Image (cartoon, rainbow, N blue to C red; front, side, top):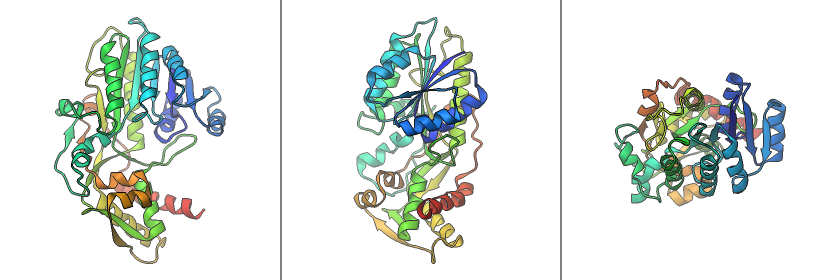
Amino acid sequence: MKTIFITGASGYIGGDILAELISKYPAHSYRLLVRSEKNGQKIKEVYPGATVIQGDLDNSELLTKESAAADIIIHTADAADHLSAAQAIAKGAIEGHTPDRPVYWLHTSGAGLLSFHDTENKIYGERSEIIYDDLKDIKKILSFPDHAFHKQVDDTVFKAGTASPAVLKTAVIAPTTVYGKGNGPCYQRSRQIYEMSKFILEHARIPIIGKGQAIGSNIHVQSVTSLFMLLFDLAIQENPESNNSIWGSEAYYLVEEGEHCWGDVAHSIGRIAVDKKFLDSEPNPIALEMDSAQELAGFEATSWAYNMRCRASRARSLGWQPGGPSLEEELPGIVEEEYKRLHG
């Protein structure tokens, strides 16, 4: 039996991973860090055999203690940007393990890193032909400067793993734009596409930042979980003495299965809203600057302006194949769910 320490089990991705893990491996010991007492109670009701640990990412001592005791760490709670949490996990992982009993750390980052060219040059809504392949372009991906999205935390994970490779096996998983209904016990909704749908339903306008031509890669939440499950399976089967490219200094896994143009998605949402009679007439575009978009729709609007194009070759080289419904197939259901959320 393995001890699995999971942060973010109440969240969208973390909850989906938890549901799949317990379904496939019910005999393992699951220790779940949960910030909210209410969510912790809900998780206990669904998974009474799991241990819920009340706490948050600012409790470094708790993170270090749990990481030292775990066989596998799955970090999904604000994992991409909370630096001290990553440092605490790394400390516990290294101090609590030996080459005979290594620990595996599956760390959730995000593909926002790949928008660096746009963010650095203040380019909004312009189509880019830059596509990052996580095998062919791994040196380039890992060489982005510290101020790129998620870079400091990613580097913390990589440095910990490369400093103690016999003890700590790391993999950084970077989903692109995630969509689809999650199977977790608490939160089952993603953000970027959903917030765009909400904005269009509330304002009856199509948000266009710049020319609205930025391209994003996307992935269904079930396909994200399937990659975590593949890496989890490799972790519990692996010989601790083996040394391969699955883990370590270049183990950066992008997760994608398609692409979308943000302006096209916005127009599609508008048409779906009219077809379903959620809006009386097709909404007109509204041109937004980045600041005004964030004021109206929150930080998620940032994604609508930046290119984030990639190919998940590393995961596919391990046999992973995405299998979720496409964004086009899911979009009508997303719009309907957002309408229900807004109108009870």
